[in-house]
Image (cartoon, rainbow, N blue to C red; front, side):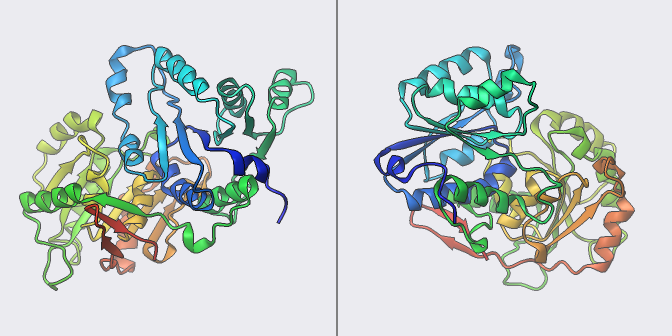
Length: 397
């Protein structure tokens, strides 16, 4: 193995490190394992995390929504992360966060930003003018002097990955490779599987919600429990989303299948679309169909997912969380980022669009039904344990 980018003597004498990233839920689903491995390898170093909000705006009307980003709930429960900078959604708060971070005098700052890498290199160096700064670096044209100058301020860099260059790698392999390159930490494949610690409060919430919906208990003790399907059509980007009208068509198609005719259905809706979804579904006559939105806390989502028999999701975090709670998933994906397919191939079926430039909405209801009729989706046995702190842990298989 080559020498790690960050000198071992610097790691030995450092008491904290700052990671800078524009994190989505899917990113953290796999990076969490890397932070866990780092904490185990360097228990004397406190992990601080800067979550950069790329939707940062001067429009005050959007701040309430950005402030409630569900990832922050998950990070608050993560035992490996000491401090989170989570107020970067407005220009004023962004500047305040920079000042706060500068006061920490971080000896090491690592930027994991893969978009606009040069800007995150600038931010990392601004936060720590005299620290050891590592950033992502993409190939720079010889005449692009501003970026050449920016990257020269880095003490080391991680080469940018591309889907074409890493066609055979899963995103979890890429992330694990970064931590090997940076710190010399080896994260074996079995330690890259996503996991969740669901607090007892939200486990009880899901049980009560299923009872309120009239779904019979899915506790594995009876052969006659009602199947429950979770449908998610929402992604942050339109090219990875399905129209809600197609979700309704899929529910009607499920009612034509003997195996799923009596299934309960949960339709995931992002909070900002909930009112529109209610109006749309009110026009339908669909029994045992319930809209769901994790409006209060992130853990509402995985707690509900963990009680389902099948999850159908577009290309977003839900399909990775399905693997984390060990529920079979049908994932609807584009061709552009195969490294982001669900990691658990045994309990995942990926439906991919036909052409590279196609959006996910090119996948039809018939495509999904064809998978349902061919595949057998028993309820996966969750590997769950209860902790003394009242959390339920879904462990790696």
